[in-house]
Image (cartoon, rainbow, N blue to C red; front, top):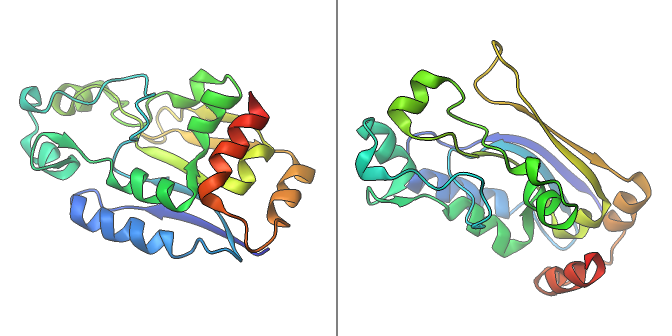
Length: 189
């Protein structure tokens, strides 16, 4: 099965544009192609597993940031995460945290500089690696490596078992991604 590798950066200023961009990414994922990508989503996980709660938007001083990161001013934008999860392109860090016991995979990745955090709320996880669900059994480790002085975003590193990764790629083209979550959960329990 071919593998689509990508590095993407979704719009920092428009939830509507991010939704369109996530929809475009979803088209890369087909029954005959797996996907592995790294991204600054500029939006949030819908998992409910994050280490920080969403910002309390009415108390955030940076109103422009509020407009850029919410839907309607008060609802944190999680639609890109939801859209990709629906088609079977899952959050690699979430898998590491929930199935490999690596809770530090979910550390916040943005608002690392204190001055920014004062204006935009607590640090949040907006940077992601995402992979076709069929590849996740091959994940061995996920690391978040801070880059102080170089970037306000850390480096995300995933380590994969080569044999299991190749097995995932070799899955039959008719692999049912809707039922894969149940299969994956039963194998990791």
